[in-house]
Length: 338
Image 1 (cartoon, rainbow, N blue to C red):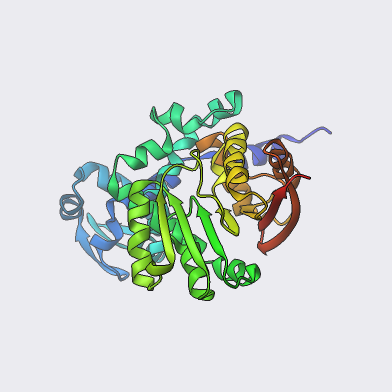
Image 2 (image 1 turned 90 degrees about the horizontal axis):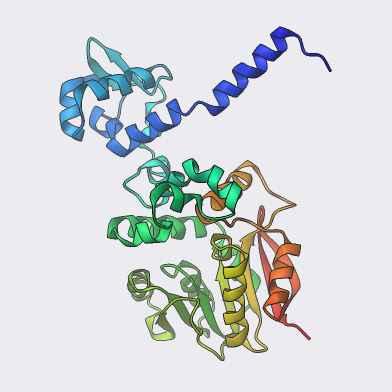
């Protein structure tokens, strides 16, 4: 089909707007510097650019250029070198925005993988490692603030779906092992919902320490053990149920199979329940974006039920049931292959 020059120009303008990185990076910089808090919470008023720059430890000229750009979209106003919040500035004060975009917090660091996306697409490896020179978890592990804030955000996200999952498990007095369970949000919810259950959390040292504190705060320490180890090592055996939630999407196929083999060795005849977003069904725009981001960061990402079944087969397991939890987030139950 022949396009008119006007149609072509409109399409090009749309592409330019879609791919322009200026505003996204400017907003991230403003959030990381916490400009909105230093300006003040209300529209109007104002603070001098020089005073604002000094307060956030930045250059006066740079802050002026940043604010001038963001004033275009009404995040700030700039009048006579006085900065105030614009009509949309309130959003920069929201903790959900700050936790996602503040580069001083762990979860915002996943965006550092985007410059390495092309390498990930060409090689199947981690774009993050290409862009940053080390793995995502190595970078977080070198900074206690980053890893702590990252764990906190994962725990907050799990709060959106944990209740539904825990209710669906229908437990009584089982021993539940949560593999890679972070700071214990899911396992703690299981223990609180089912007073007869016992639990074991498998996590690396710094996160495991915070999990221990969380279990103490929840009053369930007497029913839970913490195995401080990698899930690539032999896992605690003999439990009644093994959970692994939002872990496998961080690992390429070979490593995912290795984790599943460890689960199979430990579980024996006990069920293994995976919690992941499934592709090919109820994905929304956020799910699609998360899938590509996980690929850029880890060379991995979300998978379909059929892809999980194939990985399970390589580990001597079979997929026996799936259940939707929330949107594309689902459970997949695995058992030993007969």
